[in-house]
Amino acid sequence: MKEIILDKPFANEEEYFLFEEKSDLKHEYINGNLFEMSGASVYHNFIIINLVLILKPWAANNKKQLNVDGYKVRTPDGNFLYPDVILSEPGGRHEYYTDRPILVVEVLSDSTRAYDFSDKFIQYRKCSTLEYYLCIEAKSKRIYFFYRGENNEWMMEDNYTDDTAIINLPKINISLAVKDIYNT
Image 1 (spheres, rainbow, N blue to C red):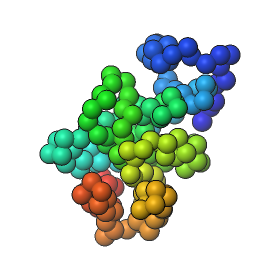
Image 2 (cartoon, helix red, strand yellow):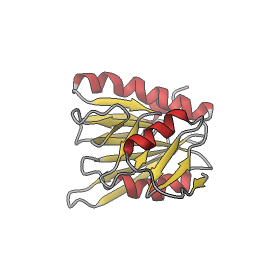
Image 3 (cartoon, rainbow, N blue to C red):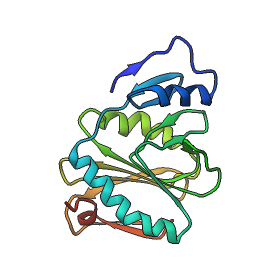
Image 4 (tube, rainbow, N blue to C red):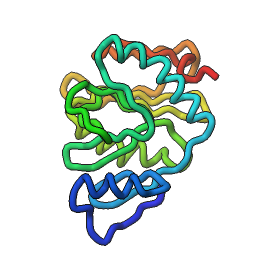
């Protein structure tokens, strides 16, 4: 993950969006600095496609917004992140981002794993609507499931490693089967 230190932060969101539109690469914007986003493997893409197939009908039936890849999450302090999959509350709809995520999914790679578990998760947790964060290994079968507990603390489970495992997301009334996420 390559960090680009800017001489000065963007003056406003529109300036950042204009920069992104002209750029050949995607960049996350955190605390006035840019972070280049890497490309995706075929395994990464299979997982995203599977999640869209699982979540799209549910999102439509429950009046939620589902976005992938190029759509951003805006944190309360004005940072912009590119998750792999975002399930969000309707309303506050913006052309380039949501500020109301419920579920954020990151597919892990060797180059992003540490960043997804630390800096990105710190930023995502600032979103008061976020209930669930999934970090999914692309090349091996392992899912790290983070969820907001009763006292607003974040909990983690990482025992999702075989096809029979089911990830329950009770606050949004959906369950995800590991075999369906990794189905190729």
